[in-house]
Length: 115
Length: 110
Image 1: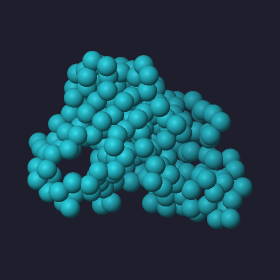
Image 2: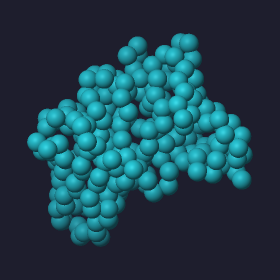
Image 3: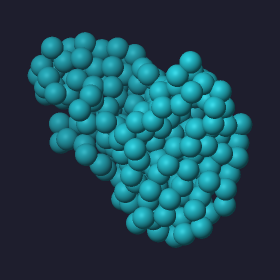
Image 4: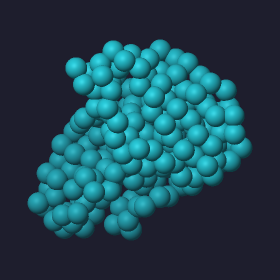
């Protein structure tokens, strides 16, 4: 158990809909990262938050947005869903944003299926 | 983000050592070398990381070349549970995002 909790584990929704994925980081971790993993793209970095503020953006679509709340949990919002958005979405957390000398811990992911 | 190059796949016999190579010729002085692995249907799992010196932990050893342009993850005795995709990642102090490559798919043969 990594200590990172993602909900829900599975989500099936229709095209055009909007969903929210939730991530609770490990206790004390201030950084949260979101990744998308599809069969043909591998693990793609989407966005990073640190203590409530956006720190970095990767290959995140404009239809997607995220935030990190004062209690440090994070949500990834996906809207106007398309079939190609079907993927595993992972959240990771790490202790400190200022140093790369820390490991990150990943959740078990949310499997999104768009039909 | 600095790139890493790994073989697409490797095989190992059970209970034998495995050496997983990674090339990172564009590494900068402040990049840490991280290794993660992903078992089927699970999230990535931290294995080990280092900066310049070789590192050991309960899971593996990390051997870093003197010029830091390559590294090797060493699993001392492969088990069936070590079958996974292993990712070598460079992580910078500025921002320290993780950018995953394609990794090495390790097959362990009983």
